[in-house]
Image 1 (cartoon, rainbow, N blue to C red):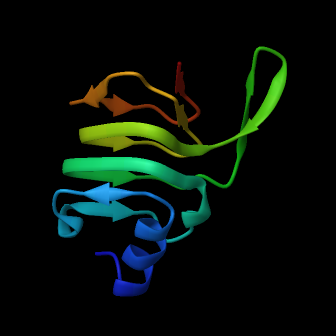
Image 2 (cartoon, rainbow, N blue to C red; image 1 turned 90 degrees about the horizontal axis):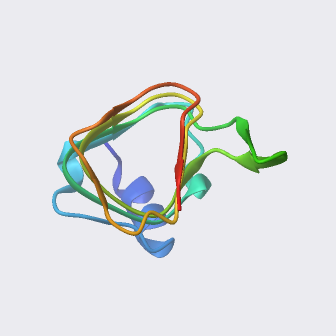
Amino acid sequence: MLSKAQIDQLTAQGCTAGDWSRVTVAPDADLARFRNAHFRGTVSLGVNAGAVDVDGVTLPCGVYDAFLVDCVVGANVRIARVGSVVAGYDIADGAVVQD
């Protein structure tokens, strides 16, 4: 369960949740890598300290400008600028979901 300080940090970074008690984050996750992320239902977020290669460019893992509903997000995943909702997915470690 997220602490009040963690929820405050995520909220300050533009994140929202329908119910913060249903959002879990891996203990070693870098909360700074969640920006403008919106969570509904049960969402589990893995460690995100790594980076991924996207079209020859190394980008940080995390969730940026996306809406997640009832998802499990593996370790070192990048989800960014998703124009719709990512709902009901179990996203594997190292995956990239963007644009």
